[in-house]
Length: 151
Image 1 (tube, rainbow, N blue to C red):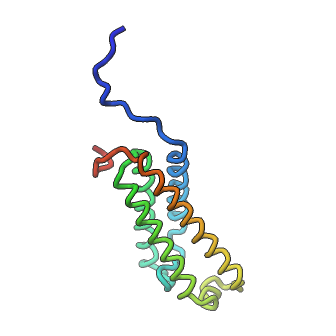
Image 2 (cartoon, rainbow, N blue to C red):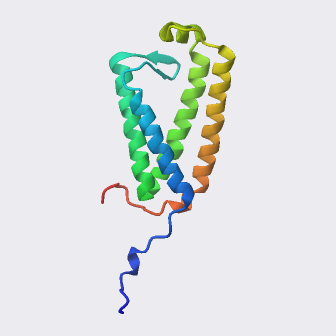
Image 3 (tube, one colour):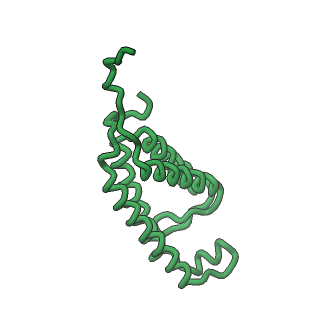
């Protein structure tokens, strides 16, 4: 058997953490797209109608791009992941402070437990921070330096 001189196509084995991240952001995409048509909290206000649909659409596109970038191991996706998570962290914090439970009750049509609302949002914020630290440490796994997903 002859050996090929095409050793430039060798790509190191994908770390399991990167595969799990891809699955997580695919899940985020599905969760986001399933909220289409529902009210959405965004930086201290609750949007409905066309504005909410556009926000969900943009968030879905970002999640899909992140998923594909994780599959392609794109370095630009690593930066996008860090920025996206910091954006989500700040959005969650502002929503927690800026949206009153009574406003949520009015939109949902049912009572909202303030302590559970605070604890669930703080839990989400801690999860985002831990996820961001994990992503930060995985920089070396993002080996594709192309700026384009499909090249």
